[in-house]
Length: 82
Image (cartoon, rainbow, N blue to C red):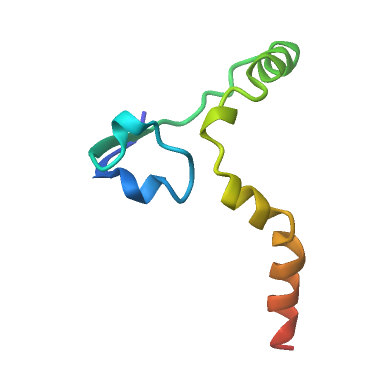
């Protein structure tokens, strides 16, 4: 199984997710693993429901506000060149 393992400054992650205070201004390890697709559809949907909102505490409100108009802005930028 392939994976990515990288050690970075936690400040980089703050643009993506909220970082707990005890991890701020430290070097952290990031591990990215593929998700196995062996789960049956019913089990998968039940797991998704159970996990809904699990990372809410790490949401970055600044980025959420930017997402509201992200699609409109991306389309405008793409079509501005035409």
